[in-house]
Structure formats: C-alpha cells, structure tokens
Image 1 (spheres, rainbow, N blue to C red):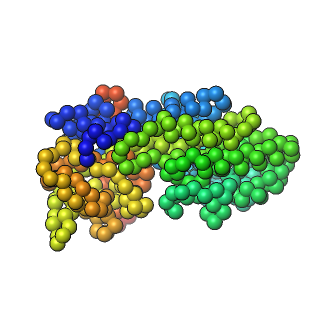
Image 2 (tube, rainbow, N blue to C red; image 1 turned 90 degrees about the vertical axis):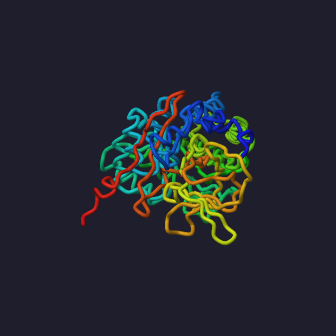
Image 3 (cartoon, rainbow, N blue to C red; image 1 turned 60 degrees about the vertical axis):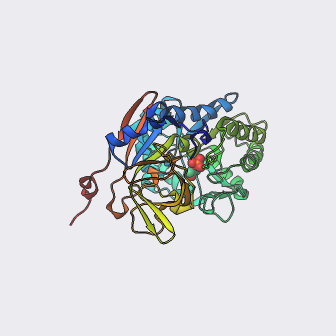
Length: 427
Ligand SMILES: *Cc1c(COP(=O)(O)O)cnc(C)c1O
C-alpha cells in the first residue's frame, strides 16, 4: 500500500525508508525484534485523542463517556482512559475486576450492561457501588431487586430499551431490532419503570439504548435517542424523573485506508444526538468502544512462508485467527502493510495463519508488494476486538502487547507461556 494513502487518522505512518512503519515516532520493526511476533502495538496518544473528541463534542452538556471495556480490556488502556475522566461500560464481573485492578476510583463511573447477568455478578457490582445497572429484561429487574434487598444496597438502574431501529452493519453486531435478544421492548418500559418506582431497593436512574456496532451513519443513533427522549418525557408525566440517558456505543470507523476524519464523524454524531435529546437536561452517557481504540492498534506479524499452489499465492504469517478473529468471524477487512516497503511488482495473495481451519485468513486476493519469509507485516485498525477476542485455539500463546506513549514504548502484557496455559488443567 502506498504510505501516502494512509490518513492521519491512523497513528501508523512510514517514518523513513530505513525505519519503515512507525507508531507515532516509534519504529515498529525494533519492537517486533525485541518483543517477538505476533505483537499488538497501540498508540496511547490516539486513544486519549479519541476520548477527548467525544468529551469535547458534548462539553456544553452534563455527560460521561463510559468506554466499552470489551473492545480492548488491557489494564494499561483502562488506566489511561480513567486518568482522562472516562467511565466504563462493562458486560461481566470479570470486566468489573479489570476496572478495579486498573483504576479503583473509576468503579463509581461504571455502567453494567449485558443480557445475562448472574446473581454473583450483580452482588459484586452492588458491593462495588457502581453507577448504574443497565437492565435488559423484566426478570433481570426482579433479580436485581432481590439481590439489592438481600445485600441492603440500593441499586440505580436504567432499562436498556430496544428502540426497533434498523442500523446497517454486519448481522452479528446489529442489536436494535425487536427480533434481537437485547433490551426491553420500548412499549413495555413505561409500565416497568412505574412498577419499579414502588420498590425501595430500586432507584430508576436512567434509560439506555445500544443499537449495534460499526454503524457508519449518524441517523440511526439520532432515531434511537429520539425514541428514548420521548419516553423520558412520558415518564416525567408519571412523576418519574430520570437522571440520565445512555446512548450506547456503536459508532463505526473506516477499515479501508484513505481519508477518515474522526473529528468530523464525532461532530456529526454529536449533533444527531443533541438534536434528538431536545430539552432533556439530565446527563448524557455514551459507551463508545471501537471508535476509541480500533485505529490506535496494529497487529505486527512475521511472514513464515510464501507458498504457491496452482494459481494462488499464500503468505503464511505467524499470527492467526486465534490472535485476530475479525476477518474469519465477520468477513472484516484489515489493511495490511509491510513494515519496510519493498520494491517490485505487487502481487495478488491470500494472507493466512497457520491454524488448522480454512477460515484462518486475514485477507483473500489482496494485492501486496512482494513479501519474503522473515519480513514483518502490520495488520492495521486492530486495536478493537483484537486481543479482546483472541483465544488459545491450537494451543497457541496469545500475543504480547506494547503501548506507545509519546516517544516511549512499553510492554503492557507479556507473551503467554505454555506454563501459563497449562496451569488450570488436571491431567
Ligand atoms: C459492545 C457494546 C458497546 C461498544 O460498542 P462499540 O461498537 O465498540 O462502540 C457499547 N455498549 C454496549 C451495551 C455494548 O454491548
């Protein structure tokens, strides 16, 4: 790929012919040699920049950006975001423990989402005195009330409503239609708030929506918040005052290189939401995940072999679907760039990993400059749902992670060892 076609929305740019691709000013090849591959590298500067885009776009109203931990749950990244005022959207007790480990003060800024919370997870969150439970069913509301009464701790809750809004994205990450498993039918919500208002252990605190992920247009966000804001006005007539509206996450990025203006995207998103909120004076909460971390990260991998079979050329890398499953799971596209561009005629190749599955590919029929065994490639825009969705399939060790802060790079997760993997097993 031509380096000039990379937009400044990515922190990965060619530094010079010798240094090759860098993350900010830090060359990637020396990091790959030092820490080994596959290796995730993230730009702290871009992560903070993206958080600030949201915070500044909503500066004129009371707001809280709760980063969706599931997108990338590295402790160092959670700590960084907490230091810049972020709250967190969690979907499990495990993610709560990550927030506690990274930034215990931020527990007061945690919202707990998810369709299947266990009693143990609810207890953990009640004891941690999190900001809000985003409740996804009537049965869950009953369970929350029961646990709150048992622990004698009041629970602030929001109903996650399903606004029945269609958002154009991959079917696996679309969540805002009535046919999806997420949320409570918006028509049922009013009755549930009225019922909960009579329970001494439940505090009706907010209302939330999340219509899916990797949504590129601002319109569906506006439509969803508009429906929610209407319901908030109805509830006010019932004397139920909600302190917050949570617009969820889901703002998408552009995985294909070229120009991507992140600031313009956020400002378009912010005006759609602002308009839909109308006269609402409470707090706006947001749960962006991907938009904050995706473009800040790359997965660096080494070419093991170049294999020709029939008409096809396969570039076999030491990274595989267990390290980054998005291409296999969502047919997702990641731009692939050699760390040191090589002269020669570009060739059409498949870039694949060594895992024993035909679905183990990163790119099919991709035109790349000639690559040789031993050289490094970067899979771009891998900061979100990369390591977070990795596994040990084929008993492969999960990659190390490096965070680049200004001119410095530091290891934030060491590569796993076989000993790590075998610990829980009983032969
Ligand atoms: C996954 C998720 C998010 C984050 O989605 P992104 O597309 O990464 O912004 C936010 N809120 C909820 C409830 C989620 O499930």
